[in-house]
Length: 320
Image (cartoon, rainbow, N blue to C red; front, side):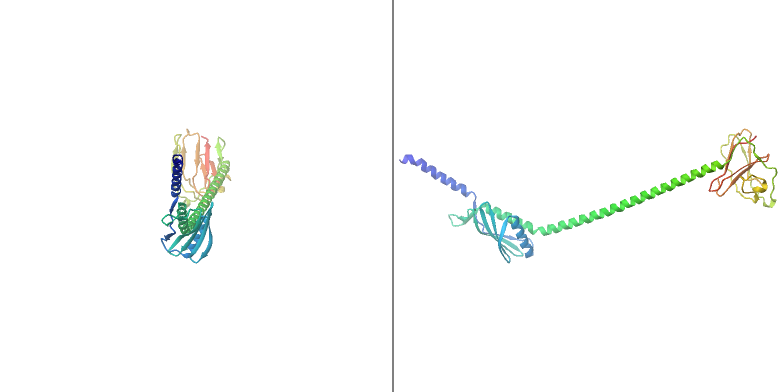
């Protein structure tokens, strides 16, 4: 009989020992109170608010409250845990009250033990409280940073708006300038075209002939003329002079196209060789100049500039 039941008894004993060892791996001594010293003194109202926010974040329910004391309960998958939280401006304490489902009991030496999950939950609650204590400062810093970023964004928008306004004004000014330049160009082209239409071009036709010349008194004649000889090789030659005189063109018998007052002596004497078959003379003067050429045979060629800053010009093939 003993040989028959001895192995079964041994197996039961071994199984019981192994089961007890397995349960012992999740049991730790109970630390009934966890004190936490604050790094700096806190306002009691802010500390209370931080503890309540932390309890809500960890799904604790506040059962009761007294000045400086909170009692909270946690229900989680068949586990119940009640804690007491005492707080002051310098510290707070987390104290175990009771629990179910956490294997709370006394060990063979009479010391309280509990599931190691209790230590984990207390540590999580402590970290959450510390994090909530720092939330006002973080939120203030974040709000300050947001305000700074907002001010920078507004300033950047203002700068962009001012830059766009300056660019717009510059574009409008440039557009107006170009429009004015274009209008001036069109007016100039029109004036040139009108002047070209008014300018006589002498091309092998009979010139005007002056029968006689009325000479001004000698005291009113200021001789400043020079003699220039033009050949076929001469491209350009500038002659400086001054238009003045008190002899009316009508008294000289000149045509209406030769309006103005002239002196009794020529301003310049231009000698043209016979091999020059085409001649062009043009003034470059301010005011209202009239260019008049008087040939040796008495032929007269003239052109009035017409005003508006234009210059008179005579060109063509002259009689030999």
